Length: 449
Ligand code: FHN
Image 1 (tube, rainbow, N blue to C red):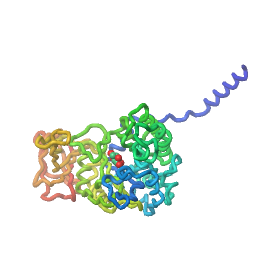
Image 2: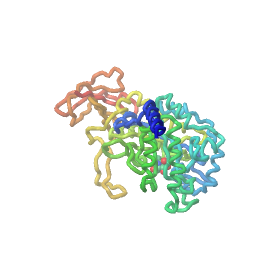
Image 3: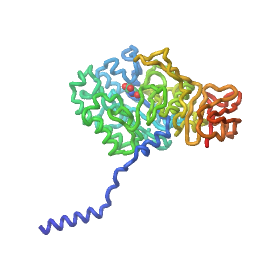
Image 4: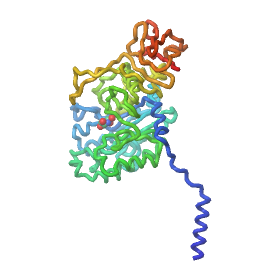
């Protein structure tokens, strides 16, 4: 009895002497979202084995997005996995990729750590089907990218296909090798591959700004989605969860390339392509122009969202030159006009976005929307930024302005010289130079009291 008492006393004393391990940081949602609200523009990278066939299988072009080639051509696992033996992206240079993102004015990078084909683009101890163990490349590009992002102060995040895994008999999606999904032991796949891989990603690559889950098939059953959320919150409480886990994430993910017509409240992001595919496809050279990308960026910010814009590197590890040129042009525009984008809030107006058009209808029969594209407005406390995509002749009149405008100037003018203006109630008229001062678009800043 006395011995037990002594043991308990000693143990209690030892416990008291050990400082308690710090509690997992309790973050408010606003704290967690702070960087995302500031960043506004991110680089999405879809890179995997699918960049080798690049849209063509056995001499035939395969229609559809490049990273879906295994599915669209119904390639058996035993054939598709042979691609790993050829994957040797010797031109991959993490420093150059991250430098490009920085030049483009992008503040975060999200890269496919595992897409639906099931191939891990990092050194996974959970499955040998990964770039380090199964390819002659024998490097972990995610480690190199994480380090480069750290050097460049760019946030680093992972795309992870949690439900679809066409390599695994119990993963969702591969019906041509493994039969219908509803006959599979999906939880066996989740527990033995997806969950442990997400743990690896949150343990071995430093701070991860977000995990971009996708296509949440069969994820709304039981606690499947919650199990992933718990892994994230336990290992890295600050990591954001996108809108496609299978339960509400930290922000909403809009549909691919789907920009809403109006302001949307809350945090959200539009994932988008620069051409018509995510993974590299050699035949898809239909690139958006830098003008279009700049418009879409400002349009999205003026409606309250973030723009996550994709590049699809080749199997050699090169980001297509056209994508690089395009993004760097946008970056040069942002160098001058970024104040109107980073950390900016949505328009207080709305009429400039366009109007419902009853003469046209969408696929569901709803009235269409005629988008207006002359200008967009973004905001910060005490500031209105009007980005003109069509330069007005002579002057610009803005209605429904709240408060008093004390100064009007152009962001392209380094001296921020005041422009002549007058205010009549809530109507402000600014006299503008005869020609636009900037390339692509010019921003008029209005300082309010
Ligand atoms: O099926 C994927 C697709 O391959 C791509 O990754 C996009 C990116 O948003 N997400 C899915 C389709 O919405």
